[in-house]
Picture 1 (tube, rainbow, N blue to C red):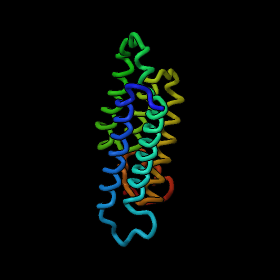
Picture 2: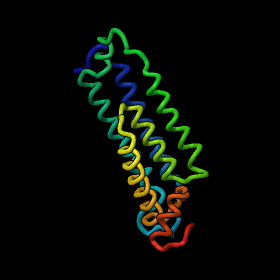
Picture 3: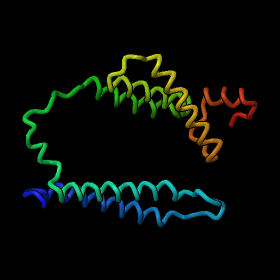
Amino acid sequence: MTRRGAGPDLAVGGFVLLLGALALWQTSVIPASPIYAQVGPKAVPYVVSAGLFALGAGLMATALRGGWSHALDEVREAPPTNWRSLGLLLAGLAANLVLIGPLGFSIAASAQFVLVAAAFGSRRLLRDLVLALVLTLLVWFLFVELLGVNIGAGILEGLVLRALGQEVI
């Protein structure tokens, strides 16, 4: 049974379902080239569309069972804004934007990773940096080798390619 005042919760669920339908429609009009034998440019957008439909359906079901926003009514006062964390998150986004062109994907994404980890309270800079470099190089390598998509080769990627005996792109 729905609780009185569950209308906003239903509206949010309906909006997410509408986003899923919009994503599905836009995915269907993506031109597909015959050169893609299996995974083409529509695969990930279809997964995102399905995820939006699942999320929207879950939100609608929760709204019909009583909703979730009533818990927000019990909150008297929001905690103060953590300006340091917000600044670090924005700095991470800016670092990625500024660094990806001149230095490449791995360094830019690693800088973003470290700043975002710090925003969430991490105090282990060296560990975060090593983890970020390993993950971003792995992601870069998988994109280049498995998908054939160059997502911003830079200094570090060039060193990896040379170490593997491949030509720098």
